[in-house]
Length: 505
Image (cartoon, rainbow, N blue to C red; front, side):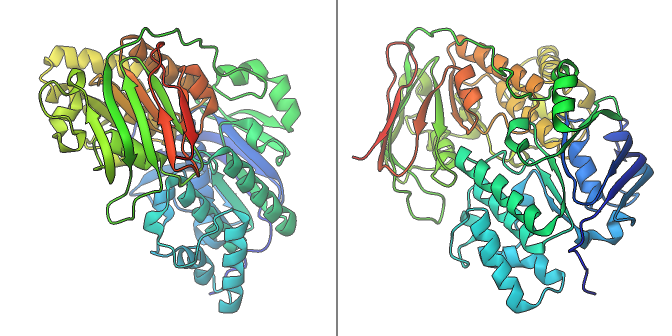
């Protein structure tokens, strides 16, 4: 059956709520909302308030009674969302979950093919959508070789090719470089102008989408709707309440931190003409020079696809260098050899900790509490001390109410905090993080920053791949920008920080 997805769709929620199977708390509840066809809505709320759950429900992909229970009613275009799935296009928080086919062109075409769009029109839409989101790659380019940010663009291109009546975007720019953020937002704006589709977008950073939206709805962590109305009226009229709820308000400084100068520390890790490659891929055109000293903070920055995540994994000892040298100094290696890629997982545990771009790639346990206890137990920490450490991490990162929850059922922001906490639990000498602030409201963001500053003040080094400029400032990191240059340098200066410069060799 060919589904007509061209008409802008309405949304009606009356006392609606959802609780995942095996969970005591409701992910969302008591939601009463009415959205007219063609409205452009920014959905806000604290991390874990139920925003992603609402989008999944509107897309009709929450599942049946075996996956959870619902209350109240929720309608899209006057029908049960599960019966009109083609009318909604959902971009999820995890772009990996939406990559289906092996080649870029086929992946973008997939949803449109399932909707019965004529073949000749499909490929016109594919080219148009890829160009709109700035993913200018050959149609046969392997999807397995895309960065996280590129996968985000790919998933959005697939949605745009569908031309749905309801466009549902869950933090669509969270892993994009600044230029990509504007490009993707403008692409969405062009689609809305052409089609008149209804938009519901979840994004913590209000200023990104403010030019495009006409209404703000804020979900309360306690259930129900905290605020609903025109953008300016909500943001100015209820600013204090929104700030307390963790909403990122334009004009309010999210980073009232002042990273104190760190005395120069021992050199822990040194890269010399380091070249990078993913398994089975050709080396990237980079030669990295980097010193990581105790107490230093370095931010790996640059456009999507330039190699930030690959460099992070290589520095963490999880990928072998494609060339050049990566050598751990004795202060870090302590007699086990100078090549981190040759170290065992137990040897890495207290030396170099990793936080992956996709949090789910490092979860092992069936509960949040058990996940946090894995590292300390592997180190032989006494059970009472393990319990105390876990309790502290749960409380500080606002995960204490989810201690028994399965990590895979958490929201995107909660998963990110858990993945950072698992690394913090072993207090490694060097902590390598990939997009550590993804999905955080302003409150949880500040707590993450505070914990990393504490770690740095105790002489631990931080290396973070990030697009979050406020985070870079807050932890006192110096950027090492990866780009078109063939060489990128960063060396520890007398303050212990890592000044960076990217320049041709």
